[in-house]
Image (cartoon, one colour):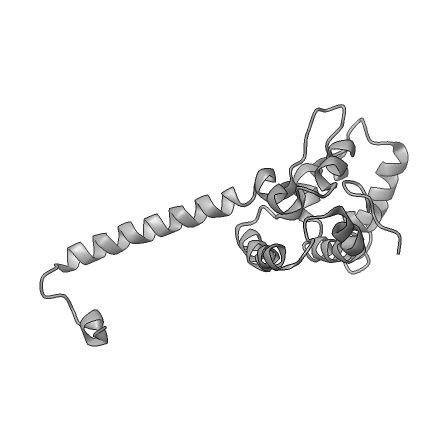
Length: 188
């Protein structure tokens, strides 16, 4: 390959053709990236690596999958933030898990899940703390409303108000009190 030829201005193509070609290529690359990101954020995609785990059933049997409102939470709702750059950072951070799935013997077994459940729960909780449980707040945004939602108990209203009035460095995030809401929290 002649590198000089790549970086030398084109003698046969106009600047307009090069710019339009670059724009079309960029748009196609962006579209392909978006399609890939969203296709790898579905429950079906998550279950390709976790199909022999009890994770999906755990969510379906929890208040996040079996509730009076008829709302069913999906993997991405809790595990991926909605903010664009945070979403992209998280997708990049978990991409090595695909390699672990391919190279780790027994990865897709319930035994492997139980063996690593505490470790994975702690990683997930640390992540949720780092984003101030923003994925929880995406759905549960009304907990600080005045007046509070009618379905909240008086105790829940008081605890949330107390927490909201604390100094920022002392304030707890959702996961600090609500462990095991979607997946059973393992005993240490």
